[in-house]
Every structure is written in C-alpha cells, then in structure tokens.
Length: 142
Image (cartoon, rainbow, N blue to C red):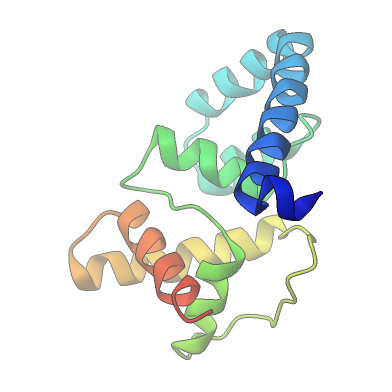
C-alpha cells in the first residue's frame, strides 16, 4: 500500500488527520487558550512567560517557544532538537539529549535562550533568525 500511495501522500494524510484533531482541540479549549495567551502579554520575564504558557495549558516548552517566537521574534527562538544539537556541536555546554519524542524542560529552554541571545548579539540578528540558522545547520548534516 505504501508503494502505491508514496511516502509524500502518506505524510499529507497524517498531517491532514492531525490538523483535524488539532482544530477540534483548539475549538474545545478556546477560552482556556485565550486566557493563557492574554496572561503572557502581562508578564515581563522569560520564566514567567514560559511557565504561564506551560502551567495547566497542556503546552510544553517547545510549543511555548513557538508561541513566544511568533509574538516576540526579536526576543525568542524556536526550541527544537536540531537547534539544541547544533549548539552542542558548536561547543556550548548543554545536556545531551536523545531524540525520542521527549520534551524539553523550562530550565533547558531558559538555557537555550541565554545562549541564542548571546549569539544573536554577536551576529547582530534577531533571536528567531539565529534559532532558524541553528536548526538548518544541524538538519542539513542529517
């Protein structure tokens, strides 16, 4: 069956089905999501913003990083296994992580922000662009 449809078609089907489930979850949790998103606009520190997104919302640091990056691209970047791995390969002191679907901790995201903010100042670019470059750096090595 896979040979008939091709892997790309299988990916599209999976994405389509997951999108349907995600839309349903968002609709069912719209008020709760709105409350969490409004909360981060009132918080000024990183840890408070991340914790307010992660506490009780079902979000982890990875999804919180996406929301924060889209809200404040100069201050935040997407936390991702590839970006993390790229920083390690560049010699930054980070815990070794295996890609097994596990989540990052809030403290790991704060460490990621510390390093990527330093890098963004060194190259005079937004933190979001630095995180994207790190992702691409590791992803192309695969």
